[in-house]
Image 1 (tube, helix red, strand yellow):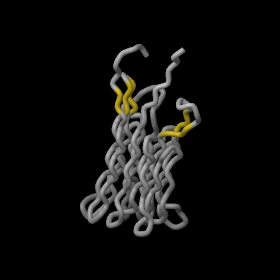
Image 2 (cartoon, helix red, strand yellow):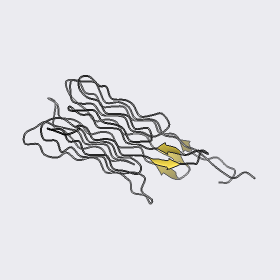
Image 3 (tube, rainbow, N blue to C red):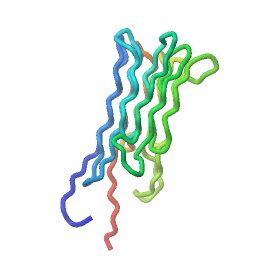
Image 4 (tube, rainbow, N blue to C red):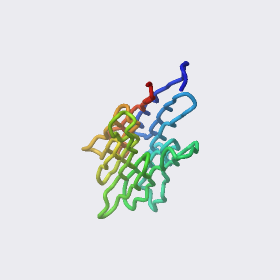
Length: 215
């Protein structure tokens, strides 16, 4: 860098989707920017099925949002959102997990910086919402720190864990609330179990760290 002004922005975490008598998407996160370098915010979680409409795929982003869930019979897969969107090299994130349940609600996990979100599978002998994908480790701050973990998918069977790097845990109706992504990690928020329960949790804000040689 040279001595001059640079545009810098720290992306805010997206709000969790509402999940009462009807359901909604989670909001996508904001972009974090230094000069011409843009780290795209994560995609919002997919919309679960509710009396107000069918389940929808996760949204695209730096990492993709996990799929919304359904209990329609027969149950068709619902896809997670694509990661690394818009595409850059090296890739900035991974896709969210799909919903492939057989009997009840289980959302896919959000994609992480180094791993895809796991699929949500809810049925006999299954675990429920998909865990979030793990984030990436960097020592730019002077010590190894993990950033960019995906949020865990909500499940009607069992809640799920967020990915390393600030990802929040998924919730389960009615007893377990989703947890938010950790501030200044870019971690995704956990998803809700199904409509009529608690809402999904917010993602964690991003971070911009500038490291430079001064002597």
